[in-house]
Image (tube, rainbow, N blue to C red; front, side, top):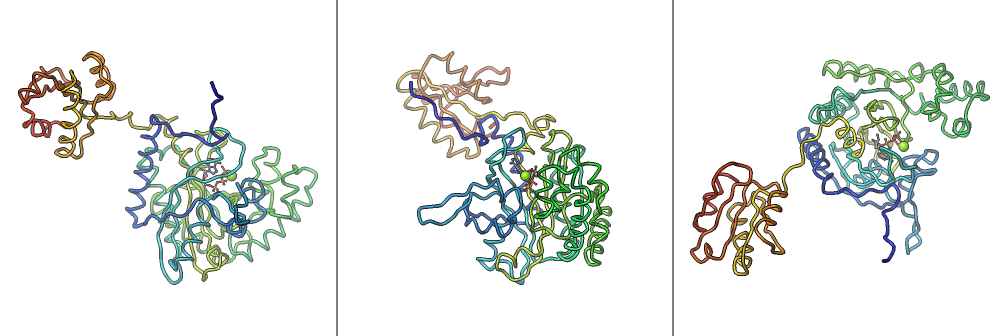
Amino acid sequence: MSKQIQAIRGMNDCLPTDTPAWQHVEQILRQTAASYGYSEIRFPIVEMTELFKRSIGEVTDIVEKEMYTFTDRNGDSLTLRPEGTACCVRAGNEHGLLYNQEQRLWYTGPMFRHERPQKGRYRQFHQFGLEAFGIGTPDIDAEVIMLTARLWQQLGLTPYVKLELNSLGSTEARAAYRDALVSYLEQHKGMLDEDSLRRMHSNPLRVLDSKNPALTEILANAPKLADYLDEDSATHFARLQQLLTLAGIEFSVNPRLVRGLDYYNKTVFEWVTTELGSQGTVCAGGRYDGLVEQLGGKATPAVGFALGLERLVLLLQSLQLLPELPAIADIYLMALGEQAELAALSVAERLRADLPSARIMVHCGGGNLKKQIKRADKSGAAIGLIVGEDELARGEITVKWLREDKPQQTILLTELAKTLAFTA
Ligand code: ATP
Ligand code: MG
C-alpha cells in the first residue's frame, strides 16, 4: 500500500458532519449583514506581497513571521491573504468604489497565517469581515458594533461574549503617546521579556498587547493612551460610548487594547469569550481612516471588523448551541428487481421536477429490501418509496412511512407527486 498523503498542518478539512454547523453560522452572518444593507464583495486569495506590508505594517506579527509568501513564475512576490481588509481596500480603490462614496461591504473566506496550530488557531482559517467606507462619524462605528451584537443574539451567544473598546486616537496623538510609553519601558527594561524588548522601539504599542503574565503589573502602570487622545478622537469615543449605551450594549473600556495591525486609528474593539481558553477573541475590528489613502486611494474614512469562523463554531459546539444534524433526504426510493431499478431513477427525476424543494435519494447498488430500508432509515427520510416489478406493471408504487406508525399504501404513479406534496 502506498503512503497516505496528509493535509498540511494547521489546515483542516470540514467534514459533512461539520458543514451543517458552518452553514448555520454562515446563513446568520449573510442574513444579518443584508439586514443592515451590506453587500457581498469577493476578491482573490492571493495578492501582491506589497499590499500586506504596506497596510498591516512591516513590524507586526503577521508580516514579520506569519505570511505565506512565495515567488511566482514571473518572479513576483505573492502572498496568500492573511486578512481581508487590505484586499477589500485594494479592490475598492481599483474599481473606484470608495472615493466620494459610501460603501457597506462584507466578505468571507479562507485566510492564511503561519502560526503555531492549536485549538482555535490554525494556518488556514476563515473570516467573515465587514467594512463601511466613507463615513467618519461615530454613528457608523456604533452601527457596526450593534450589528455584531445582533449576530451574537441570533446565534444564542450573547451571555458568553463581552465587548472591549478603546480609542487609539490620531496619528499625532499616538506618536506623542508612543514617546511617553518608550521612555517608561526604557525605565523598566530589566523586567521586559525578549519579545517586548524587540518591540519597544519598532512597535511599542504592541508591547501593551503582550500575553505574558509576568508583564501584567508593569503594563498596568504604563502611561495610558487615553491621557494623550486628541480632542477629535476623545469626542468621537465619548459619542460612541453614548450611542452604545443608548442601544443597551454593555462594554468595558480596555486601555491596553491596541490590536495587532498598524492601520487602526480612533475606535478599536474586540468581542472576547472566556469559553475558548487563550484563543478568546472571536471578533475584532475598528476604524482605519488612513488606510485607503495609504494604499493609493483618496482619503476615505472607514470602519470594520473580522470574526473567526472556526472560533465561532468551536464556541457554539462547546456550548451546545448548534441545531441537530438535519436529515439528508426527505424521500428515499428503493427498488426490487431489474426493471424496477431502471424505473426508480426516472421516477425520482419526475418527482424532483414536480417537488423541487424535496430532497430525494435513490438507493443504488441493489440488495434486498431489508438492506435498502436500513439505508433509507439512515438517510433520515420520512418517506420510503418502493418500486416493485408487479406494482410497476400496474403503474403503481408503494409508499412506506418511515417515521410514523401508519400502514404502507400502494398508489398510482400518476398520483404520487400529488400525494407527497401534502407531506414532503
Ligand atoms: P489573535 O490575537 O487571537 O492572534 P488577531 O489579533 O491576530 O487574533 P485578527 O487579525 O484581528 O486577529 O483577526 C480577527 C479574528 O480572526 C480573530 O479575532 C480570530 O477570531 C480570527 N483569527 C485570527 N487568527 C486566527 C488563526 N490563526 N486561526 C483561527 N482564527 C484566527
Ligand atoms: Mg494573531
